[in-house]
Image 1 (cartoon, helix red, strand yellow):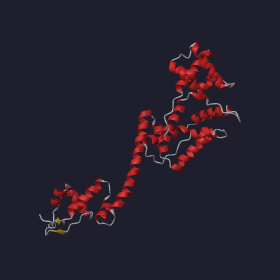
Image 2: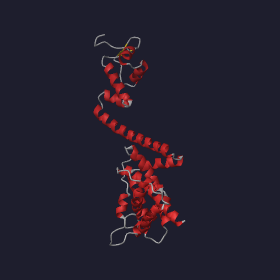
Image 3: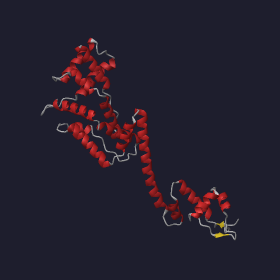
Image 4: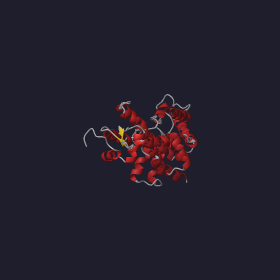
Length: 297
């Protein structure tokens, strides 16, 4: 068969690997038009049909629509521009798929209820402006009127682009947003911050954060496996009491501070902001609370 010979649909099918039905469909859509017809009405295609169909098959596998493919094949649209547009569209689809993957992983790992899943999904889909307003509202709710600007900065999440291309950060953001809107969590955190502000003398050196102080004081006892009920724990309890330095109860404060949601907040914030994973305060607060309880019994 020489280069000028016309091809039947069957011959094109053998040369391209496409089915006769598919080639006929493309022909009916004007993507690969017949050059001539036989006296019996059968279509015949020119020598460029094989290359044209190869291009169509490639572009279809890359996800382009038939109307766009026809325009590219007819040189009505430059292929590089079409490819660039589809790259952008695919990137958006990939971001959405990563978000879905992140949220489904959160559902599986944290055993979320259908209501919690729906809430996280809605929060993850917020626009950039909506995310910024949510962060501002949370910070206002827990820090308003307290001179704790430095602390506020350490508790502020960066606002990632929406949808976030990083699945771990997308999942962390959605969970952070749900936690930040929890009224009980806000109220508990607000009380803790009020306590912290009250312990910072004006004009003098600020006292260290009580939770950080407890963790530092208890760390050697935990490392040594010291029983909180042991008399050897008395100096640690005395040091914690000195750090407390307030009239209200030490044990209720330790129990109030030992909220797993605070550790989770810190973990989520680290993922969102790209910070090192924080050390949990739970073990130190557990030990301290038990040591104080034993001595009050």
